[in-house]
Length: 155
Image (cartoon, rainbow, N blue to C red):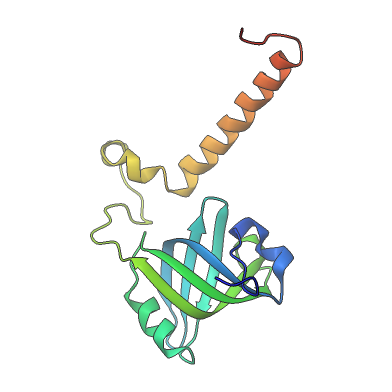
């Protein structure tokens, strides 16, 4: 990738409004609205709506083939949109599938706890466990800072 098209994390998209950027991540969800494919893409920092239109023929055809948890790299222009997750979306100009996932067992519908425990290595990619782990991390970090600040260092 060139410097004219930097690779950015999804959490930083809002600050890149109007710029052409590249994002790497996984398909979290997809819906097609006739002449447009909306990809919900995630990386380790958040979710982003990506809009693929027929004018970008190769990208449009590929977007229709992508499945949940397929890994990809996409390039496009960041647009501010308060309806989109994080307040920004990407108008995709190019799309590259790194791997198209087959038979991903966890969909966006509700699953029973037994099923989720059998597939917990995949369930951790979902929104709820990710949010729980972020809260847990924040609490543990605060406790460590508290004790470190009071001289309770391991020797």
